[in-house]
Length: 70
Image 1 (cartoon, helix red, strand yellow):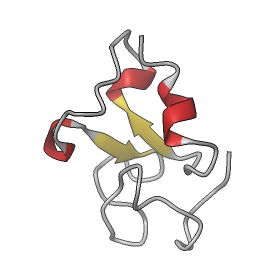
Image 2 (cartoon, helix red, strand yellow; image 1 turned 90 degrees about the horizontal axis):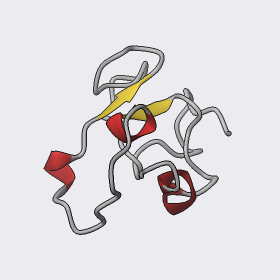
Image 3 (cartoon, rainbow, N blue to C red; image 1 turned 120 degrees about the vertical axis):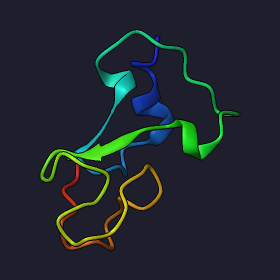
């Protein structure tokens, strides 16, 4: 189950970051290529945040204006 991925991504992730594993039971695979992980922003409902930059577990960090801590 991927629910523990919240711990893998850490508490530094943005509250608006979403991915499929939050909604279905799936194993977290840290070896999976980045391209196989689908992320979206809760603000825009697509792969770009409100600032026009891509969203993922690394890019959605406190340096972005749209970032909201958990």
